[in-house]
Amino acid sequence: MTSTETLPHAVGPGAPKAAAVLDVVIPVYNEEADLGPCVRRLHQHLRESFPYPFRITVADNASTDATPQVAEALAAELAGVEVLRLAEKGRGRALKQAWSASDAPVLAYMDVDLSTDLNALLPLVAPLLSGHSEVSIGTRLARGARVVRGPKREFISRSYNRILRTALSANFSDAQCGFKAIRKDVAEQLLPLVEDTGWFFDTELLVLAQRSGLRIHEVPVDWIDDPDSRVDIVATAVADLRGIARLGRAFVTGKVPVAALRSRLGRAPLVEGVPAGMLPQLLRFGAIGVLSTVAFLVLYALLRPQLGAQAANFVALLTTAIANTALNRRLTFAVRGGGGAVRHHLQGLLLFALGLALNSAALLALGWAAPAHSHVTELGVLILANAVTTLLRFVLMRVWVFRQHSTELS
Image (cartoon, rainbow, N blue to C red; front, side):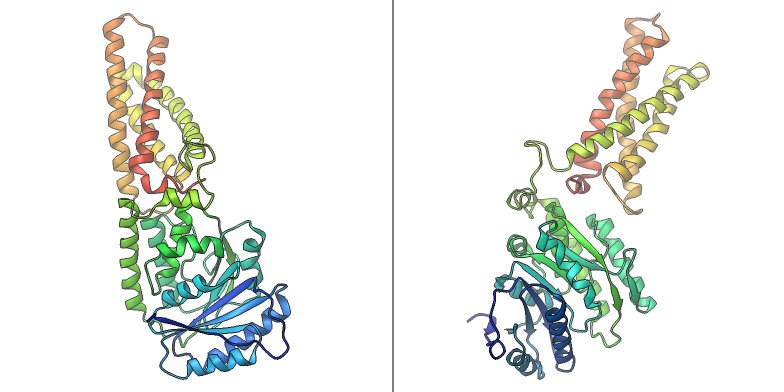
């Protein structure tokens, strides 16, 4: 016995049953009052403005009121409306089952309260239909979005997305907006890896998509908060934090096969043998390295007459190392916000110690081999030592300091 039951329905009288290009899933639990107005409004909008065949799937996850009867009546009344019933609760479970069972090339979902303006639906799915992007999300936090909601929910939403950026290096702006779409071929690869069956489902799917190198298109939306929302904020927040911790562990331990996913999804490195993201990172790191070396040589030349070779080397190298770490954190590895900044800079100081040891050893070796060497020779030796240090810094930053950020840029 399975936990799901699909209820097929005939479409409206005399209506042709063309293969759906878009399948919009509406997950519901005890929504007997809102379901009818939602589906009728969405159906009318799609019929009037969407240029391709569509389907609306009501995914009822174990409702105990009259929601199943309302859904069946809507399916009998409106062409292209179908019902999927599940015996267990869980929005993520409902979406995973509905998307897995659908044959439409583009899959979407929206909340039953229709808080998001439906005029954003076509812009949401257009990049997927064209093949430009693999995942598309509505966002209430990007420039151009217009949002009406209370300060409490605004604070919670922004705090949650900041946590995602810090803990999981999320580059998307809004994980929780109930307005998303994904290509079917991509969903087939990602859905089996999504473990959450509740509200964290969206976040987990998006993080997997980002780590797999997929393009996530964002659509700023007009959004009005539903004051009758039944979401338990505290319970959901606790579950989300647990999900973040679980997902973080999965990436660290290699439980999630990111490299294999990239290969299957056609997002493997452009140059064979070169890890994803390394080439653009190397170019940015190299440019910063050149600037750091020039700054180091200028500081060293200015300080050497007063401090001597070793002290001038220490001060110049420490100053440029701190600036180098900050610039690479922001530009090379695209780390946003202050999360992890202290740890990154402490690790950067350890790299500074490595560079200091190499430079100091080079100066000592030069003094032993050629006591009467010129300043030009001394600078040349330091340039060579800095080049070796820069190479080591890049490798260690990529595999240690900014490890979780290293494969996300392409």
